[in-house]
Amino acid sequence: MMDSQMNRVEKFKAIRHQVSCYDMLIQLAEECNELSAAILKYVRKDRNANPTPLSGQEILNRIETECTDVTICLDVIGRLYVDEDLYDEKLNRWLDRLNGKERWDLGGTAE
Image 1 (cartoon, helix red, strand yellow):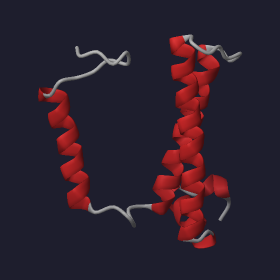
Image 2 (cartoon, helix red, strand yellow):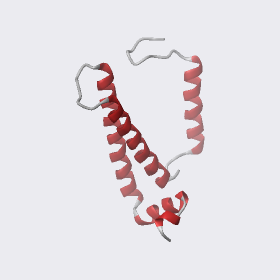
Image 3 (cartoon, rainbow, N blue to C red):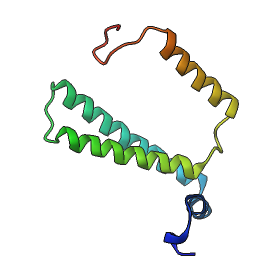
Image 4 (cartoon, rainbow, N blue to C red):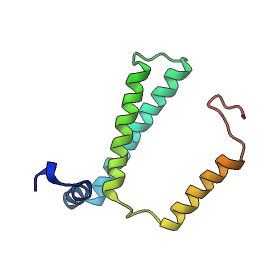
């Protein structure tokens, strides 16, 4: 089947068939590092403490690209390593923190 005629799930399965989970985990780690670097570059630019030649829009574009790469890796790996109960517990805990706990802005001061 031609790539353009495959839906996303078929593409994920085709990749999973050709790339081992071990290698997918390596890919995921690499993409997470690239996303982390892009986010740190954004913070650096936002704080203006250590100038970077990239514009804010260029950095946001990099973040978008790296988020997409990480999401694709996670989709391809699927939920092989995710415990659904733990997932729900962590999601609920995050929402609870947002709804009732002290929040901090990027400057480190309580809101």
